[in-house]
Amino acid sequence: MSLSNIFSGMQVSASGLSAERMRMEVVANNIANAHSTGDKPGMAYRRQRVNFASEMDQFMDAGATGMKGVKILGVSEDPTPLETIYDPGNAAADENGMVELPNVQIPIEMVDLVTASRAYEANLKSLQTYKQLAEQTLSLLRGIS
View: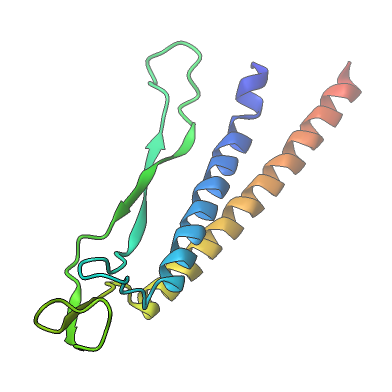
């Protein structure tokens, strides 16, 4: 068993921690901009979301562990349509007095924040458990030799 195989579980958890931290940052940014219409027509904030993909080694390759964790593909805009309201006094109003509002819904963002937080906690607990197992394994190996 190689040293990279021993620590692969830690790498999986660490990638999960990083991905969920990024997701929490994006959700916080969405909440902060929930009412940002911009100062010109067409400048309303669009909700952002993080795109993930799982990373896996090819099982046919020699020495592949099959685990690599989560990869952040990037942040993209939510394509849902923006709501418009009539507010001719707003700086972001178009020639008809219509203002586009951000497509951010606070209840959805709060659910996303809670799920990201719980996933972060789960990855952290997994990392701590894996660390304890690795420490116990190393102490057992020291006792054998």
